Length: 95
Image 1 (cartoon, one colour):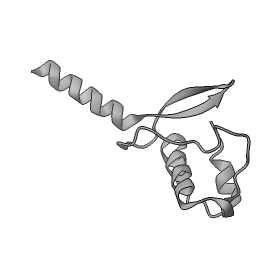
Image 2: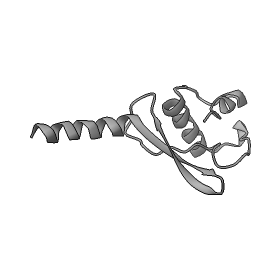
Image 3: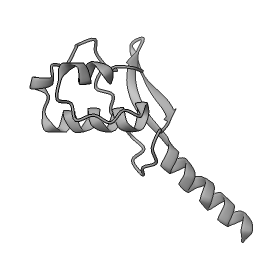
Image 4: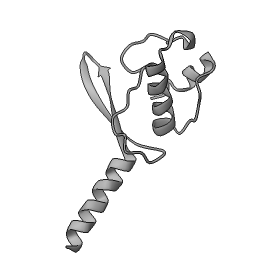
């Protein structure tokens, strides 16, 4: 019983603190695993900058893309942003 409790606690901790996103690297899709800066049950993230070299303009981002970038910045990089300026988008380009 104790062992099952420990395994369950470790699984919950892993879900809360480990995330991943997929990136196009060398012609193939690579899964990048990372430790989250803040706990959340969301495990899959989308790094909008990882798949192409295109610089995204803040005024052309859809609401969905903004949400992806905000989540990625907060949980992967530890940066809280509202994406008001182009500098906010560039700040979240880190890998």
